[in-house]
Length: 403
Ligand code: BEZ
Image (cartoon, rainbow, N blue to C red; front, side, top):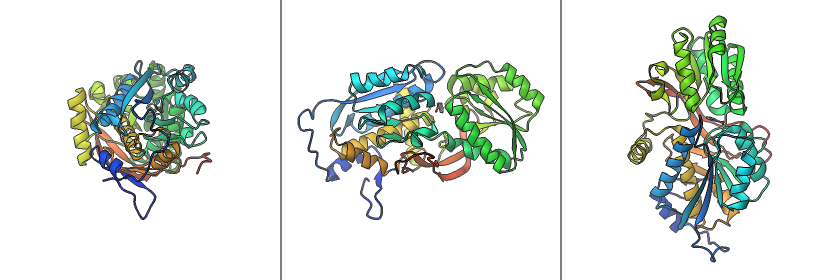
């Protein structure tokens, strides 16, 4: 059920069935939009549909649209028009693509991106404006809910710090003293490796070498040879999508898997563990989702996703789904009035998503999820939960002047 909580300002967001109830229960009276009320709500989407992150973009889009379909296929009673652009993971093209959505298409909301560099480019354009509201369904760039935070920018995924920081302690707890980090050389890789390293060293470990790999290159042989000669106790890595498949397979083929355990934020094996096959078995990662989370929402979500799209759901589809939940609930509250920016923002910043497949989470004052980070291990081709690595973890939000 959706309700105002007397003891806090938070709004409790629940499932598809509750959307209609929320609209009926709301006391919000739209004032500005009687004319054109029947026009479609325009949702601009900027995600990768080609290249190494294509699987991520498709997973987010599928589940985002599935969630809105489950809420009756409308936002606040209005039909929805999607304008989706392939980001091509290109930072140089990001300003043009963003302006296409904001200025040319005049979308009401922007959903995207996956890539941290693109997120920064988008935030610089959208943050200083009053609208549209931007919801980030993946890109973890710490600055989006840190130095670039803005009233109209929300994230439903994670900050790069969040899934990486607990991983440092996991490696130390497993008895490792030395580690090498290896990651794509851009904000996501740099921020995740820094967070993991920080917590590894706080817990007695030492990172003996950082190995940045140009994005989105997948030639790992020279780095793997160097790892073999450095002989660290463990390796901490960030790759995702197609690049993660190649890295994990190359790591095993180089004979490192059984000698130097591989760890990382869960993107390393998420959505790709089946394609990685035997090479991924046993890898431990930390992330805000695991396939076998034992809650009814997750079970229903995974079954619905499989029915609709044939493949398995993953963390990216969870993030897309939760983006759909946040948007449909907010639009129900304002009865479809996309001009009610203040009310939409105030709803989103006090949101608590109770029925997320990842488990309940709530929005921080910097507009980033406060959420559990799970320790997982690949078993039988699935990322299965071993425990909670960090409970209700909140990004520090360094540099955000909003709150
Ligand atoms: C990022 O660029 O923020 C990112 C991309 C893929 C997975 C996780 C983070």
